[in-house]
Length: 178
Image 1 (cartoon, one colour):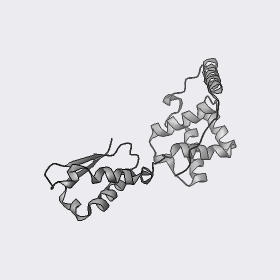
Image 2: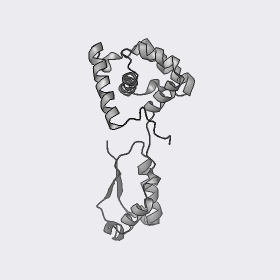
Image 3: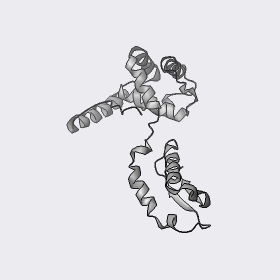
Image 4: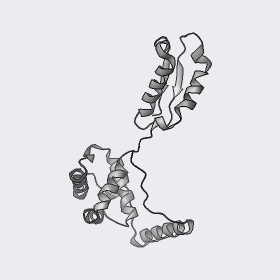
């Protein structure tokens, strides 16, 4: 997992000033950056994705359009670019922006193994449903905040290691948020 990246490091008073400056910037330019600011067939959008693919070897053209637009709009706002054309010019000139936009597109996945498996194991081990005879009632385990399913697989492995062959006689459901 890549470390988190930070756009700006500011003190609380500096944060307030940055918000004020951003608000003034968009008031003075009468710009309202919305999804409509980037058209699905915008040539600069295709150029950005092509340059990203060339430099990172990742083809983002199959990502959801709304995700791509939202991430690019965020970068435009950060760099005070009012149009996609302005942002593309900046994007071409500043080589670090390619990596930063790539990082914005990529989803950071939590590493479930870092969530103290011993604590989870002890809670499962002493849960009465796991000690009693198998029944028709399923045992439901909610896995919150999944981004890729890694957490559910980790939980299944943990359960298998804990229960051994008894798991085959149990009706266990791992439930993920939608």
